[in-house]
Length: 495
Image (cartoon, rainbow, N blue to C red; front, side, top):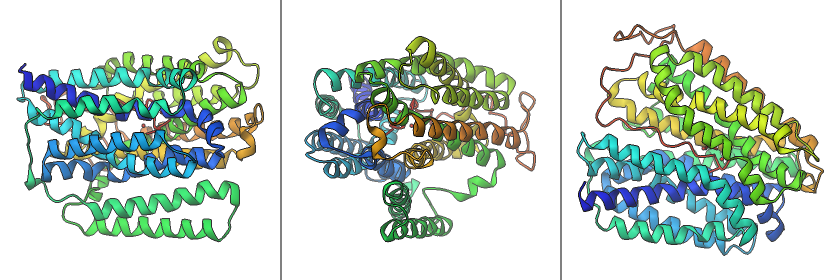
């Protein structure tokens, strides 16, 4: 490996690390942020959802922007913007400032997530790419694994502001390394769908605003107007995507039954996971009185099991077919969420928290790799990268909606954040999260056919069987990114 390739690897690993870290460390610090900024529950929801909103909306056009304008250039702009907005987050004097900075930070993250992989893949020969991507994924996974622990320690030993300031030196090192990355572009891939992204952000923002504010304010004029604006924005988004020649969301992909099913399962699984990671940390600290470090450490087994089991599940799903894993994995996750919803004041980690954590980690380990492989394998090989990007965006969307919906479904309000007063609402919300996740298993059973014979392609017709993967994966297939706790995309916790 040349010096230039080593520095490319350093730049892309650091670039993805700051995004994955931000997705995991912020949740653990939410109670500390609430106390310091006198934030109510809606403010804490926006701390997570403002970032997820723009990250979700601009994730797909972010990669296209790099293809057209230059991958290194867009990646470097994303890095600089992420570093600057991280500092603004750390300096926030009030919740509105923090939410606004997080909104812009999500746009920067949308340039970094696809940008890190596209820069990496453009800098290595096809035969060297698997090793480089494997190194990138492994080290990014390590940062995700230790994110909650690092966030808990920083929030407790230093300040919640440190979880944002720590991004600055990482970004500076990545920008230095990026100077040595060769520039590459591919204008033939089409223009980025910025109009679609803007409409998606408007639509999702309106819906989330109505859900978050509606919990505190009820159905007043502001929440109704926000909801109506959101529905109109999403309707316009679908119309634009249907008419555009190179849309960011190719609606034709959803004519494939298996693709629709696997993305519905992804939405259900990450809805449960994203909401749970948001609520669990609040319950551990506000409901049980745990420290940020203790609550961050409590989540470590989830990522450890996910990292250990995902490769095994991926290989087994290749031999046996994905349906057994996508039926049982979400059920294990749902069982874990249900158990975690029962914890209350006086709960002990080993007896009351750990069983649910273990089920959650085992279920994720059985689910994540098959989800990604089916999302890419049930469409034509040349569209596998787009399919993977859509699946990634769906997972982010699930976390966005979960943080907005579950507190409302549980009847949680700002008063619930008082010590020991949120357990009832928390339990109801976690039960809803478990039910939605279990529904994902039912969707997988109904939409995914039995495994096709090895080497034979299953039809993409009414039975919904996914096409068998080709004997050799396409050289430029987009690999699955390490799942980031959606503040809660836990592994994908918020962000």
